[in-house]
Length: 410
Image (cartoon, rainbow, N blue to C red; front, side, top):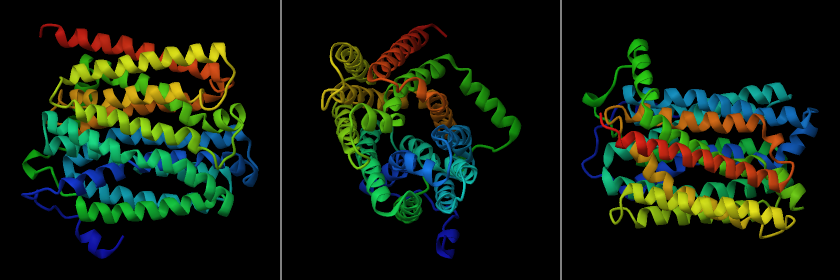
């Protein structure tokens, strides 16, 4: 990182006029690190196994290492940004991610790769968490929901490009080129954040970064029934989508007989679905309540998950039909998530950064658990569809519990 960027780590006052276009772009691009760190890597898993002379299951655990550390550190990113500011936290994390990506590119064995993947996970989630807190620092109500939806729309660039780029990088240059690309991406994000990300948390709004204070704060957040049930619902429903991301090599290459350069069959429609869901959420912001938007999203997911199981019971895997219900599920998920995420953050208005950390931590723990056992789910397209339905049912149960808790008298 240059001396100019280092000197810029000092606080800047909140600008009088925030450039919404630039802010939307940088918040969305900060969330690109997660999907690019995961999806770009997927087409190369068989090649990495051969190159490092390691079993496929052990190479899969490098993904688990990334997700596990990602989840653990997500608890800290928000609290640190609550104490020292959003901008400083973001610039330092991006620089550290670039260094860890270089370590992955130079890995000579699977253990070295696993170590540096863990370091990547330690910093990859900072931008996503800080971004959610920045939205609530700047806006409230329908404006916040609209900005979250706009961020989600720009974010969809990553899921569609990541596996496609990964497949071609693998074919043209080999798997190490993927991590060289991540170095370049993180350097670009440093520059974008330097240019467009203001400091949105005033000094008088900062929280103490003390062990006892943090322990009490985490206890307060993680024992709040409404927060826990809403976050659990988000986690369960996102797992229903994430299993298709993790199992993409098996789902596409084995079940649907595609090549590593043809991941666009899944990730292209998924990105379009994310964009459509985010547009629906933003379109209805201020027209219907956030709770009604959440209900609409869950209704769409229910139709998709039930239809997915029925389709796989009646017909063998085929294109494009095996992908259609997954895409519809993603539309529903992205319709509901912006409103549900804002509702959970609003439960703790003075500690939104910490609340965002806890929110993402719960979701990541669920994703990490699935990553460790994904081989049990990807054996057939039917088992994947049934897992998606089970996760949605768990999400529906927990969102109903959340609604009941919120209606209960204090």
